[in-house]
Image (tube, rainbow, N blue to C red; front, side):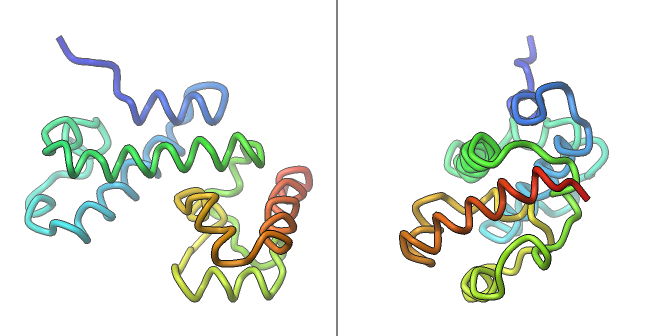
Length: 149
């Protein structure tokens, strides 16, 4: 008997209802992250038939599943803190964060959208920016949710 897809469950929890766009984005991003660590496990994998259905993740060794689990936990913490906004899946950082905040983030990661920030742990944000600026960062993201684009 197959277990409920934990990535689908996480997307539903974050969005407050089933959200196929968020679910598929999480799955694609996790697949990419796992591929960076262990490229051979992503060779000849069907995105449609294995990744988006969740079966790819079920077959992984626990250590590689841990990459997905960490990303899911960070995503939950991020959206619990700032609130869910579907536009984050495609919305750029510019216009929502200060130039300083963007530059600090770009020193470590290259996010394409606000959603990519959901994978960065809250502790890492504070370490990158300091307590005062990280508090401002979270307030900026909450404001971005409030001013939906």
